[in-house]
Length: 304
Image 1 (tube, helix red, strand yellow):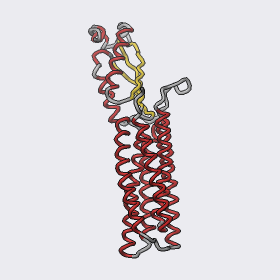
Image 2: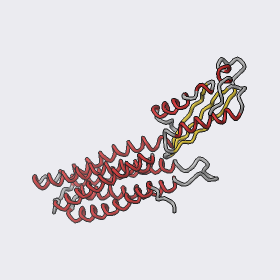
Image 3: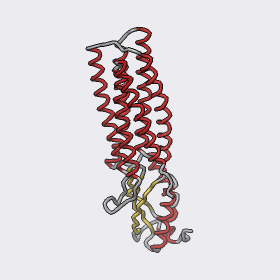
Image 4: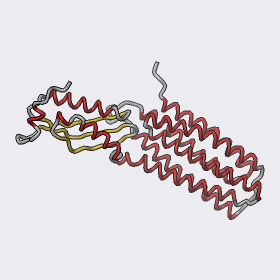
């Protein structure tokens, strides 16, 4: 029996929780006439859509490479994160527009207690769901799950802000606190969208890995420097949770192909200890006749 994919399970949990919150927020928001609660319901609706996209993204990204996608399907997760960021920006625009309408045409918010209750429940549920998603996202290096977790963390703060606005209305009677809370929600959503775009869109353009990760990889290569002359043309990129590294390795021209192949295997194995999913391509080059390092490497013992 195949083991359950933890990424798919986490994404499915997010879909179920967001479905419940959408129904609860929209029902209570319409009932009490709170634009803040309704805006949170719309936000959760997009959370739900994003969770559904993330679920199908992690499922598809887990498929192995095939004839049409020889580098795998990892970038589907990056596309999922980018789409989620776009959805968040749309939500922010709609919420801000509704808040403006509420300021221009104010009306009283009734039964504030129900609004406070659903916001409190939403904050608690999303806090634990987002923490779980981020934990699995970090363990599996899934940008789709981490994006969903970041979104829900923003929802926690947004729900708390709306709840504070409703409490303020209850004690002061200031109806403008509700749309102001909605504006705060929109601001938080825009901030989350920017962070998501930065993390998820860059790999779609084959941006290099962070300098810290590249330094770790280079250190692993240099641990074998007694067996090669030098390395150059180093490149790196990321697709979903997969990291792709390639570089040229200059070896002594008098060494055997078997020696060079064994050296490459050792370097690849060391690099794989750094990250979950890593694909390394090494191009071997022979040294020239005047190579200073040739004498040392040619006399080196066979790699064990």
